[in-house]
Image: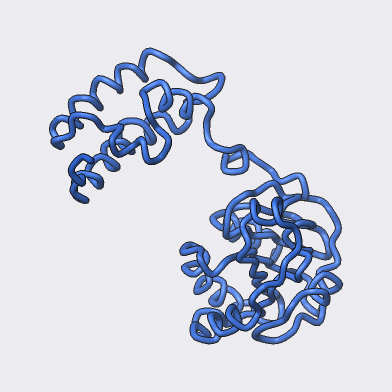
Length: 244
């Protein structure tokens, strides 16, 4: 067994990998891919890894299933998942949805229950193990406070991974554990919160259909029509348009 690689070298390699490969080739995939600049970047990367004190960077990268420069090239050339690209639009945009009817079938755990009064609804699918979800909760609370009575902000928890649902199907959620999790953080979860039902109705009928595969997943509904689904970073742009 080889010696454990120090954490500072791991961090340094991650930084070099990001600067040499991820950032420069972020928009150069599929039909815009160029082979020569990539292999030039490889030579720079080799020099930088030696400066860090690593003879073989794949001792670290291999743990992320990156075992060769060809693997790096193939990943970059394929590009990011379509649902993370700038011009991607979820296939559920334009679909009608009865939010009130959906929520009536879920477990309510905190905040007021949605009564259907607000015409603009922000739904966020999240999990207790998702760090970015917890970070975004504070922003959603501020949004809820700022537009109270006009915008309903609703969190829908589902701690199950997609693969778990695919393999094992329906299963009971630990409602009391999630309720306690939210209660302990009630200062940042100041909006309506629900947990998906045991058939994973909300996850399968909405998030899965949205084709956005990450938590948190935001869905914006205006007048019963889905006008946005995807990454949280674009929510405010679409919300401001809806408020106008």
